[in-house]
Image (cartoon, rainbow over all chains, first blue to last red; front, side):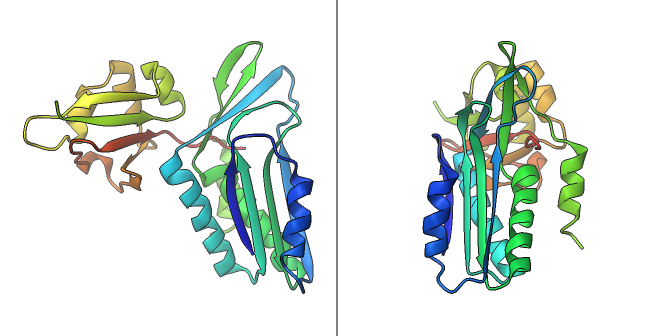
Length: 148
Length: 85
C-alpha cells in the first residue's frame, strides 16, 4: 500500500496511521515518524513553498527508491505545504514491513532525503519578519549516510 | 508577443518582488541563459548565476542551465538550493 501526498492544510497524523496499518495485513512491523514545527524562540510561523511539477513527482521517485532498497509492504509519505504554526505536524512517514529493520531504515532513509533533497523552500517568521532557511551542512552528512 | 514565463522559487521571488515574470523572447530564436539573465533585474541575474541554482523547463530539470533553450509559452523555473531541516 503506497500513499504519497502533499497537503495544504492541517492534518492529524494519527488519523492516517490506523488506516495505513489496516491496509497492510500480515505486516510484522510498522514504523512511523512525525515531524512538527519546532517551537524555537520567537518563531511565529513557518511557510513551505513547493514547485508543483517537481515536488510531488520527486516524492514518488523517493518512494520508488525506498521500495527498491528495502523490503517493504507499504509506505505512507505525507508532507505539508503552506503556512504552519509551531506544534503543527509538517511531515509524516510510515513504513510497513515483515521485519522491523526494513520499516525503521525506510523511514530514516525517506526523512533524510525529504529534509535535504526534496523540492521545498522554507521561511520562518520571527518578530514579524520573514527569514529564508538555508541548507545546513548536517543535511548533506545525513544524505551521505545512504550513499555507501 | 512571444513570451516565456519565469517561475521564481524561495528567496529568488523576493529579489524580483514577484513569484513569476514574463520575459519576451528574441525574434525567431529560442531564449538562452545569457538572454534570460539580461531580462532579469540585476540582483536576480546575479543570484541565479550561483552554481547551486537549478533550472527546469516545463517541469524537466536541466543538467546544464548554461545550455538552456526556451521557446514561446515555456515555463522556466529558477530553483535555489532547498532548505534543510
